[in-house]
Length: 429
Image (cartoon, rainbow, N blue to C red):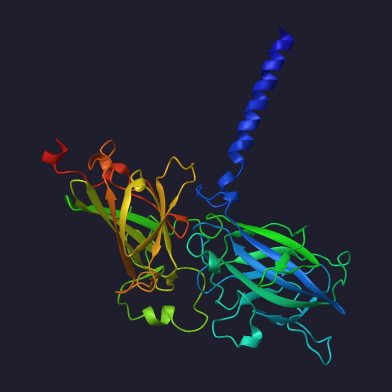
């Protein structure tokens, strides 16, 4: 009996210890995008060594955005790494290092960058052709794989010196970082793989890289921000009340008013204009929710066989335009979308083809694809026409409002169901 008692005590202690470890451990969702609809989304960085030079190699670096709904907008990506030895970048095409570093040990031919930990940025559109390569010079903007697969990649070429000149002698770079331009991405180590194969335009000849390695970077919404970046308000044609974003959805206003700017403030120009003003942090209009972006879902019409929704996205961020924005929404009636106005649409089926309740929306070029800075032009609108399913459709009990909303991949704060616009009492009965 004593032995059994000791076993029970040890077992209980083990259970308590395991529980304590689980409580103290970080959430598993922080390892990837918080939206479980795209758990395998990532940006893959591929280095292809194309030929050797007397003191190193020439490589083509290509980044592929395999994320369904998280793009990289202006001012673009910033890719960094740390050289394993004393490597330098002799020259680049399609991109440039942000700093040259200390090249005083070189005489005559000066490298493009001598930094131990260079940071590289894309070149701007309109760059001279002799400085370009394919898939370069978009200002660092990469579309999502869903919106525009043809523009979901970015490439540049670099000539590396003071490096190995054989596959056995090359030392892989390490400590890769990817910013968009702020934090959020975590990159793994470089892994050597099968050399890439390239085909000529007619497909009749294939060449291959001398050496290829890949780096995978995944995004976590928890890294760049501890508070949400968007919120949702709800309204309807059958109730005059608008349910606003919850108070302090993205933080509460500072009592001194130093963390926001009132609309029309004379200090607005000095706070947003001029070089060096980009800090990666939003400068928002003073509101009760303090969010950079608000999405309003308005139940506009209720026909006999159809119902209509108007979506308005408003930018309260004075420092940023949202180019190629996208919206991901979950609603049970999305399998019956009939027509769209001012929006593009693609169904997402993360839970299998039988469940079609998640949709991705984005703007129509050139009218609604850019969400301008806060102000009069700082909003875009679109509408959905949905066919009713007699088995499930109802206006009551908040069914007509979205379950979850994400703007550019970030989870938006939504009002609690008890505050949803309700039917007039006679209709509810």
